[in-house]
Length: 496
Ligand code: MFK
Ligand code: FAD
View 1 (cartoon, rainbow, N blue to C red):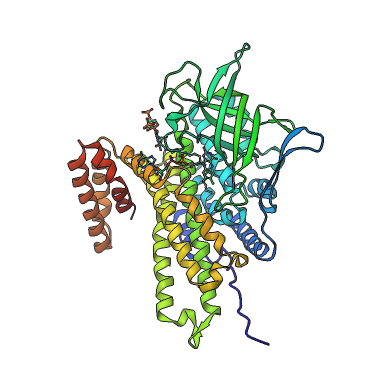
View 2 (view 1 turned 180 degrees about the horizontal axis):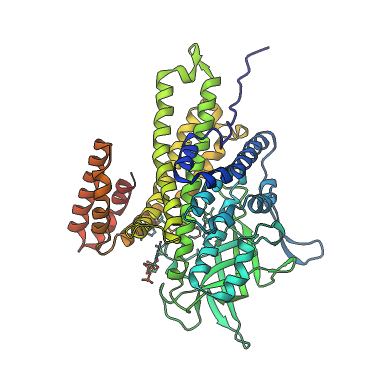
């Protein structure tokens, strides 16, 4: 028999992840740590099964059928198996409910689940992120009627009552420049608000609800005149006729995720709060979904490195396993080091979010969270592409072959930098987060931590970066164009 190469095997994503185990052991009280173990173990088992399944079955995409045989408009979407299992997995393991629990650790416990579930979910985590974001924004709005209406569904632990929410922001006019939104909100004779317009990317089109930006009729132009609305998409088993799915997008990656172009033709809608400042009202959602993005980006890196490391023990070249070739081992070690930095940053944001939400954070930590959220999103988004590309090269030609399951890692990784705000948009957002004297306050707050740091070399490097950033911000404070032109460089050096 001719030589046959052993394929890579996926080690248990939870039990073999030293970074995650060490973080949870360090950050959680013993009783909470123990309670979390069963869910994480089960999600890890599911992830291992899903990888096997993906390697042994033909990959499918969702299919949209717009009309039935008798000419009726139906807009039915058939989903892939992982998507059909999504509601049961989410509710059984309390993925969203955990994040809204009554503890400063709730978000960390939620994001540990998401980190393990993401790849197996085939981007079912995308609408989950938006559902989590919608729950957070509705809570922040203080709108009692909507809190009572939507949150029991969004945070349900029962698949039969669980609802997904979309986030309808992007239009043809712009996804970054949301202030150019063309969708209009009009009140009918009964006083009911209804939305009219076109949303250009809708990734949770199979969901039961959404938060949508629209311009109330007669309101002015620009961002401040937009309002934020809650909509429901279903009438019992049928999609509401005022929501029309025009088509599913043909995408580079995230193939299992049905991303649609839609029309709203009078869809009933309810404002979350005042009929203006909709972007301000949707910001809690954006900051949560950006945290999801960072965690899912590091999940992609972890998967790519884990498979590459395993393969290096199975593949021989020049008389020994790749792992014993010093340069290949060094390549894997460099990838691991970059991953661990990104892992620490993303989970710091997750933990900080929980502490801030539960009033357990130090005074400066809310400002730190506001800054680290865009930094973590933009940094991990870029790094995921770099590390997934490097990991594919670790398999040689096999990394380029579709039915190894490996190319998908790279294709999917490209999305992290684009949606939820591109790298440039988030660099500009980090300037927003640093406005006024926030940066000076954060530097002062970090001084004690840096003084007490055992790693003198790291502390000194961080101090130099902060000093350089402060000088740069001072120099360019008065010249907005210069400030914006350098915003990406500043954001990346701060993230590093
Ligand atoms: C599997 C992984 C999970 C991830 C799932 C992802 C699913 C993908 C779905 C999507 O992609 S949904 C669409 C996401 N779209 C975006 O992220 C929009 C990107 N564009 C921006 O973020 C722009 O920066 C923004 C629209 C906010 C800029 O518009 P403007 O017109 O320059 O806004 P402006 O006037 O600066 O801000 C309006 C208000 O919002 C201000 O507050 P005030 O009204 O009090 O002055 C801002 O301070 C506030 N704001 C903006 N961004 C904020 C924020 N507040 C807190 N946090 C933020 N991040
Ligand atoms: P543009 O805003 O036109 O940006 C083009 C380029 O210009 C980018 O490189 C950007 O960085 C740069 N740019 C823009 N403004 C500036 C500036 N001021 N300074 C410097 N550079 C700038 N949206 C939703 O609302 N809901 C969804 O469910 C959803 N799902 C998506 C699913 C997928 C798979 C994808 C790919 C996108 C999805 N989006 C969704 C849309 C996504 O949020 C937008 O594509 C994204 O925000 C970018 O907007 P845009 O495509 O209009 O690009």
